[in-house]
Amino acid sequence: MKSIIKKMAALFTACTMAVAAAGCSNGPATTTAGSGGSSGSPVGVGFIFVGTKDDYGYNQAAYKASLDVEQRFGDKINVFRSENIPETSEATRVLEQMIQQGATVLFPTSYGHLDPALDAAEENPNCVFFHQGGLKTSENLGTYFGTIWESFYLAGIAAGSTTKSSKLGFITSFAIPQIMLNINAFTLGAKSVNPEITTTVIFTGDWSDPALQTDAVNSLADGGCDVIATHQDSTKTIVELCESKGIYVCGCHADAGELAPTHWLTAPVWNWSDLFVDMTQTALDGKFKGSVYDGKYRGGLKEGVIDIAPYGSAVSAELREKIDTAKKQMIDGTLFAFEGEIKDRDGNVRIAAGTRPSVDELETCDWFVEGVIGSAN
Image (cartoon, rainbow, N blue to C red):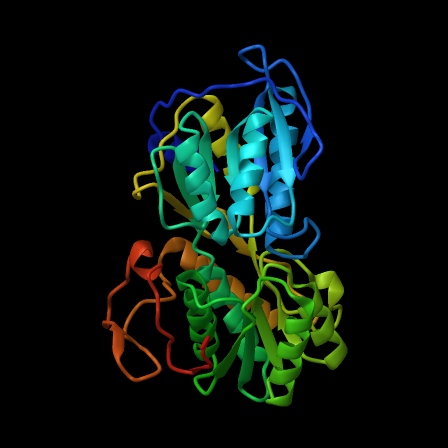
C-alpha cells in the first residue's frame, strides 16, 4: 500500500482542523474513548453505515476497516460508529451529533450519504469528510472508491464458465452508474468465456430488503437462471437462498462463502483497511483536500483496494487458474474489461475499437452491454 500512501499524500493540501474533546451521549452514535493524541487530546473519527455490521456485504467490509483504524491509532483517536443510518437528512443529523461529540474526521460510507454529508461539510468547514463512492466534492469533502468492476469481470468469468443454461441472474438496487458498470463488467467477463450468455437483472429499489431479495431469487430461478450474482449491500439472504435452491452464486463486497458450502463461486470484495488508515493519517497530519481527480480517489486490483473472495468448492482448479490469469493481466495492464469495441444492447458502439475509457468516463455509465436483460423502470 506504499503507492497509496504516496498518492494520498500528494492528493491533499493543508487544512486547519479543530479538535474538540470527545464525549458520549445517548443516541445513535457509539464511541470508544482514548486519550493522549499528538496534541494531547484524541481526535474524533466517525463512521456511519446504511446497514448492519454483519450483513456479509458492503457495511461489513466498511465496518471491518473502521475496526482496523481504531486498532492502528489506538488512544490517538476516539471512534464513533452508527449503523442503519438512512440516506436522508437523518444522516446529516447523525454526522452533526458525532461532530458535537468531538468528531472532526468523518466517513459517511453509503452512496446515498453524499448529499447529507455535503450539507454537514458546509456547516462544519473545519471537519474533514471522506465519502465512499460519490461523484461530487467540496473544499472539505473528498471521495474514494474502487474500480470494483474489475472484480465483477472476474466473477463473470466464474459465472460464465459454470452456467449450463447460459442464463445468469443479477440482483441489485438502483440503476446508478457504478451499478450499471458492474452489471456490464460481469456480463463482459461471462461473455469472454461463453458468448451466448445473457444476464437478467432485477432492480429491487432497496439496498438490503430480504423479502425483495427472496422474490428476486425466485423469479430468476423460475426464468432458468442457474447462476446469480448480486450488487446489494446485504447478501446473506441471496446467498443462503441460492444454496438451498441449488443455484450457483457470486456474492458482493465481502466473503460469504460459509453461507453456501456447495454453490459458492466467489465475490468482488473490498480491502478498505489500508486506505482507511492512510486517509485517517492524512487527516491527522492536517493534509486534506479531495484529490487530483477533482476530489476523487480510485484504486483497483493493482492498488489492493479490491479483490475477489476465496473460491468455493464448485470452482475447479482449471477455472481458478483461468480467473487468476485474468486477474494478473488486469494488474499488469494487458487486460482491460472495457477495451473496445463494445456495443450496447441496442447495437450502438459505445466504446470504439482499441480504446480504453478513463475511470471518470466509465463512472458516467448509463447504458447496458449486449446480453443484459431488464430495466429499472
